[in-house]
Amino acid sequence: MSYSSLLPGFRNLSPAERLDHLQSQLALSDEELDLLRNAGALPLEIADGMIENVIAKFELPLAVAGNFLVNGKEVLVPLAVEEPSVVAAASFMAKLARPAGGFLTSSSTPLMRAQIQIIGVSDPANARLSLLRHKQRILDLANSKDQLLNQLGGGCRDLDIHTFADSPRGPMVVAHLLVDVRDAMGANTVNTMAEAVAPLMEEITGGTVRLRILSNLADLRLSRAQVRIAPEHLDSADYKGEDVIERIIDAYAFAAVDPYRAATHNKGIMNGIDPLIVATGNDWRAVEAGAHAYACRDGHYGSLSTWEKDRDGALVGTIEMPMPVGLVGGATKTHPLARLALKIMGVSSAQELAEVAVAVGLAQNLGALRALATEGIQRGHMALHARNIALSAGARGDEVAYVVERMVSARDVRADHAESLLKEKRQSE
Image (cartoon, rainbow, N blue to C red):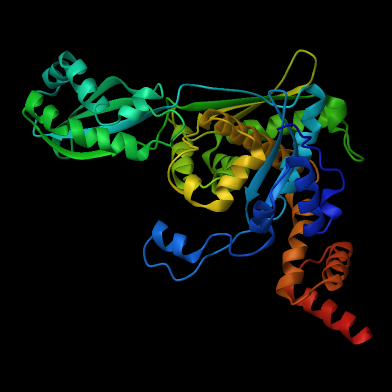
């Protein structure tokens, strides 16, 4: 599929006109267009089979972020999110990144960890070596539980043993199965393998297995993105690009050393990543858990991204973080819109999806830092938030634009002001 991720004037189109543009770019079928046009793309009977106690469906706005160039490939990014400014900021930063080639990405092998907790072992160091001595037996048993994964080139690859000589419950041994899960997120696969090898581990160690569960700290399943932006592309009416770069690097340094700032800094990164994970039917909670745990890997909670200046004075940003996502299994196959979101992106592997996700996170991070370091976060954010305020006040159709324009011009974005403006407009008609 060949298309451009540039979306000139897209924000000024109606939703129907935007869909017409996507259809011409992506050759969407009538059935796929109907999924996007009509509420209720997820049938209630399918929703009832996905989770327990279903009573209805809860919808989020689904948008596309444009301008993304990832490893030379044009990518339209579907985002399911309720927060104003996320789509606009990511798209604008992606546009600024294009002159230098957009985003360059890479990723490691999709390895997930399954943990097997063994208690009641008085000699944890000896138990560790015993397990390693029988490593091949353990790997063979684990791999016997998923022949399809083996055929696809994946499978249990290694055994890693951790010992805790003095836990609150006494000595403990924790065995990690390292499993290449290919295009799956991998939770069900690694959990099945962990349960299968548990009796053998009890036999080898003489201990008792308790938990057998994956770890969401997917520190062997990393995705990376890089971006470079020349100073002239960061010029604005109020700031020179060179000054903007210095301000962005100062803002990054704050997040690198202070966990209170880092929490909000990383939340900005996840503002870009989570909506893509949701839109593609992946487990955003697993991605969040792994991201924040990884941010503590050096002994303190810090920034997931880095921002520096290269020898030519350009701003360079990088990110490396766990990204356990899949294209097969779960809601990625069950939810009709999740399948369509993947088609819109044109990704062919879980690793490619993961790499696009971190590129979007880096773009969103840059958008937030640029705003914070210059005019402040509220100026742009509140202008977009004004639409929500106008809608909540009851504005519809042309009334929305009227109320938004008046609130933004007055720099007074409040619910009571919106109600007053709406009343004023209706009385004048």
